Amino acid sequence: MVHTKEINPHITEITGITVDDTTNAPQLKDVLQRFKLFLGNAVFVAHDVKFDYSFISKSLQKIGLEPLLNRSLCSLALAERTIVSYRYALSYLNETLRLNPEARHHRAMSDVITTYGLFLLSLENWMKI
Image (cartoon, rainbow, N blue to C red; front, side):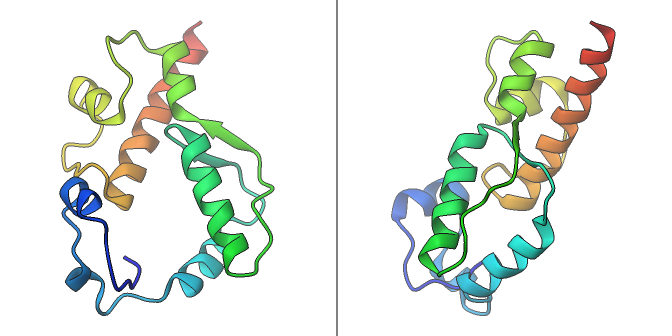
């Protein structure tokens, strides 16, 4: 969580997160600085990576930090090449493939765990090709 004074109602509808949930959360600047240190030079992996990468990179710039320069890998693109599925939305793949039984989609840690499971399965399938 990140402290905020307002949340778009659509975001609350999708995530279930309210302003009250962020009352004791750290400020965005602190979270982004820690994230940048955590990421270091690692590859940035996300489902539909362009969105997350761009969002975080622009957020870093808004607080005066350098944009992301890390290489990136898209678990959605990887899944499309290694898994046969009717749809490739993370929630659909999770339900179909049972990647994360505790999933609460559009919640950061839950999506990380689900994406990690999808990434591993995609790599396993890639090795079989």
